[in-house]
Length: 342
Image 1 (cartoon, helix red, strand yellow):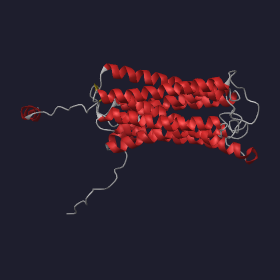
Image 2 (tube, rainbow, N blue to C red):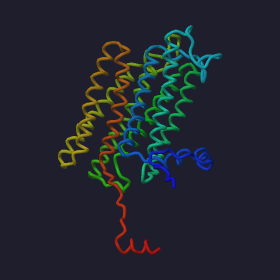
Image 3 (cartoon, rainbow, N blue to C red):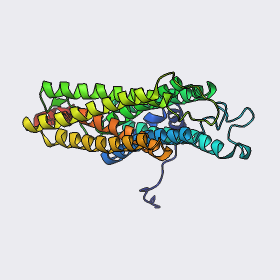
Image 4 (cartoon, helix red, strand yellow):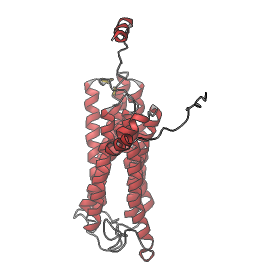
C-alpha cells in the first residue's frame, strides 16, 4: 500500500473562500497567517518615523534649491506628462523625486499598519496609530498639491510643514507604543513635573510654528520666480523665534534639575538630557545660519534639527509614564479540568 509522503514545508493552495477573504479584508487575511515578532513591529514603526523625517528634509531641499515649481501642476508634473521631462532640467527632477518619495513613505506606513495588525495579541490602539499616519500622509499629499497650484503661497507652505509635524508626532507615539504594553499607564513623576513638561511641549509647538513664519517671510521662497512672502519683518520674527528657543532651552535645563532633585527614574532623565543636547546643536546651527546669510545647507540642517527637537520633546513627555504588558490570566488546574470536560 502506497503511503503519502510528508507534507511539511509544502505551501497550501488557496481555496476560493481564501481568495474572497483576501480581497474583502486583506489585513485580516495576512494577520491570520503571519505573526511578526515584537522586534519586527518596532522596526516597522521606526521605519515609518524615519521616512516621515526624510520627507520633511527632502521637501526642504525642494524649496532651498528653488525647485518648488519644478513640476508646475498637480497631480501630474505637467499638463501632458505625469512625470518630469528632460526639458524641465534639474528642478523638475528634484520636485518629481520628492513626489515619488511620498510612495516610499506610504510603503513604510503600510508596513507599520500590517505589522501592527498582525501582532498577537491584536492591539487595536497600535493599529489605529498606523492608520492615523496613513490619513495624515494622504491629507498632506493633497495639501502639497494645493501648494503647487497656488504658486507656493507661504501660508499653505507653512501648513504643509505643520501637518508633517503632526505626522512625526503620531509616528513617534506609535514607535514608543510598540515598546510598551497595553496596561493602564503609571506615572513615574509627580503632577508638578508633568505640568512643567506640558508647558515645555506647548512652547516647543510655538517655536516650530514661528519657525514656519520665519520661513514664510524669509528669502528662500522655493522658486526662482517672484513668489509671495508673508508681509512681516523677517528680522523681528527671527528674534521672536530665538527668544522662544531660549525659553525651551531654559525649561529643559530646569526640568533636568527638578528630575535630579526628586530622584526621578533614569528614563525621564535620559530623555531630558537628549533633548538638551539636541537643542544646543540646533541653536548653534541657527545662529551660524543667521550670521552667514542663510546658506542653503545650514537651513536644511536646521529643518532636520527641528524634526529632532520635536521628536526629543515628545520622547520626554512619553517617558513620564510606563505601560507594562497587560497580565494575561492563566487558568488554574480546576479551570483546565472544567474546560476539558466541556
